[in-house]
Length: 479
Image 1: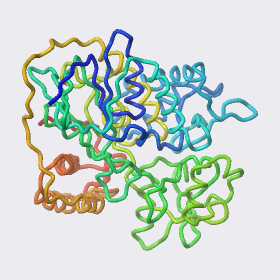
Image 2: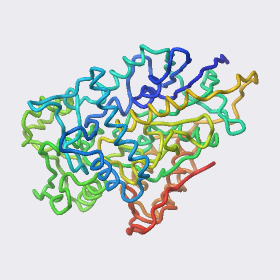
Image 3: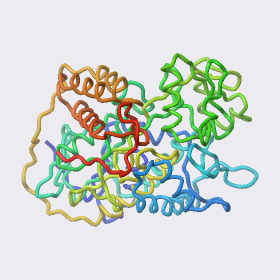
């Protein structure tokens, strides 16, 4: 097996991975490994429609962005982490503008949208609903100017850790030894039967990290996006509701009007209510017919709905929630450090306590930029002795006789928007009958975390424990 030594190894080429990578210097040898093809940009950040939240408006304050984030997080946000996000995030957005990135504008300047849970219009977008695509391409352009080696079609198999220090990342036919390693590999939402995520977002890195001794946190918190097209995984951005779209059922009831924030209540509340509407026999629709210039403002959504034979500007579209964002992940501190000396994480695969129990809309791209940058700078400070010891895999994994669709349906049916002890135990029992691999391993850990959290908080709702406990605590896993 071929071996090579790098100052920094980064797992993942989404926005968090690129944000990490561009912090490298000419003197450093940085490598980015990703499982997709070289020309592919497939990632959750690339597909993001909504935007980036930042308090850049004259009538807005970072303190208000802070308050909205904490309020959405249902008592579980780590406030020092939130403070870093809103302060450094604003700086990052202003820096992007200085670097030449073009956000959409109107007659007043940069156009600022409104999304659920925000008290002010502070969501910046680009090329309508293509913010993820545009900003990922921009960061990739910055990365190409650095001393960065990209390794496509490389699937991570194991991370070797000795004496609380990471030594090597092992791929199918390549071993990368390193001074430091940064996980930036996305979340695990595609473990669910209906998900907005790329199909590869199965949390492989989370499983590998935990097996190696890296701690995970808050796996039970999976955020569901309220509005995806019925029978299709395509997401209808929350920004549509910020521009005037609204939810209605087949009795023509605007059922969200009874909640604070109405159609722009936080995602946990909207998803719960849509779930209850559908379970009671109702159909739920998103009515976008009142939005002006919909084709120009949301070109990707307009194009996709046309391809599906839907005229979004003329008729309400039937919708349903789908697994969208993994709040839990690799436990990190404010420096993006894990419990292992030279291993870091950033983006959706990580968990700093930033999102608490429920992520505020459009904070995820900001998180990838801010904590990717922090991980990049800090990881470059690490130094390892170049080991001459031959690296060998410690574990053997088998995927034989494994049906991923069966696992996805169990997760969707029993570990979804509403959970209870009987359903969680049934899912756990069935999964334990399957051939063990990284997917089943992580699914078990998610379910065990959900069973242990005997309360309802944010996007974790237990029908058998509907109340929220007074004390908010994180759930930490160590293998």
